[in-house]
Image (cartoon, rainbow, N blue to C red):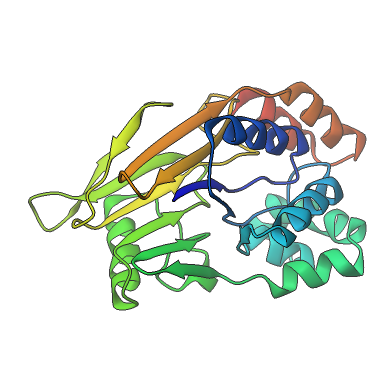
Length: 252
């Protein structure tokens, strides 16, 4: 099975469509969205309509922290309110009852045999912990293995990284090259961060997604050009914070 994984779309219609088109050219058997369908971006309705249609066709869809925030926007002034949460009330107001019901019903994880999909860390998924270091990846993997999973695919961190079990006890970090297949062992545990489709933060504005070919045990981390100028303009037209638009243009 070839599994195409798209995460952290963040209401970026242009990036989503570019990744879907690229994935279809590559070929896949199963499509999965690892959460944060909305938040930051200017087209939450268009993105949700498309994801809901794909879910009806069999795509797996998980809930992310920004999906949760869109359902219950923060009211306190703090890091959530001044950053991602700043646009949550606007996003909430755009969504229909059907959109909200869809987001509310999304699961935090999907597990298929030894493969676990989750937005944030498998270590308390509802806590939205970042898998951004060898230690954090280890906690994630420990929690997954307690559920019978030894291979984990996550989003949330907006970077593409592979953590794998080497000869020692600690996980080792690997930075993949876009488009180059990375062999992964069926017998050694690993955690892969699939990257952000709609809001890359590594200085490269190209969208990210990942394909996992379970038959040949290979991960391919893709980067896809898209019209980020148009996506930034959608943010400005919605009168969301200018920083959100600039982040798409800079990829950071």
